[in-house]
Length: 252
Image 1 (cartoon, rainbow, N blue to C red):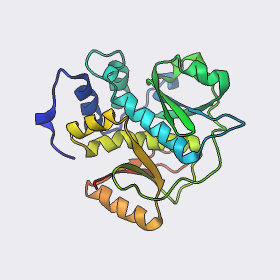
Image 2: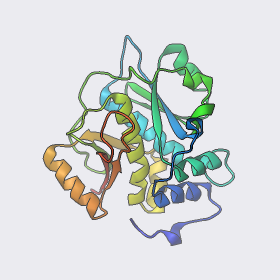
Image 3: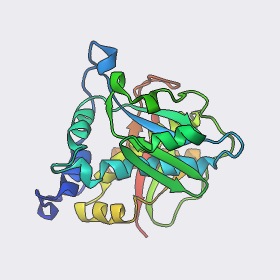
Image 4: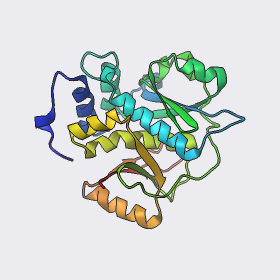
């Protein structure tokens, strides 16, 4: 991670949002009341008759999270700052839900950011108490987010790449939450200026499945600070502490 103190403007909402991600360490205890748990709801559009491409859907999901976290409304005096601060001070949780048709249209009315990637669309919703989730979101199905297809494996030449662990089986919903977290952590590998340029490029990134050999090298890169790993808390699908995604910034 690069020291960026000279690049920061305290009056700039972007810099608040950038600092939050760079300083994020995770952790925290769960509240006694399950309704007080803070989570980001993620909505993926999966139409029954025409499901999206798997790689494109995960890419859209990851970009939506990054764009929400780096949005000017998430810093300064913006309306999303307090919810993002509280969420990042707690255990990061994301809950992926499926929407189609009128459900998808209704989800656009709830605070958040939608991204289209090829045939796919995903929306990240501003985090909040799970007990207060907007009914237009809470009524959406959490299960049933699986679609066919393989995640692409060819490495991009440059830019942010989120590598998925080849040894884990995850539903699209679970993988969407993991790459969303990876997109947040990728900012730790960027200077403030580079992160600003990334946002201007709509947080363009690639989602890829690593080969076993690539995964071993990425774990090494994480240990030396040249990549950053997502370690799952193990609430759903996989064992606690599993490394699900590793974020890398590839320089051409």
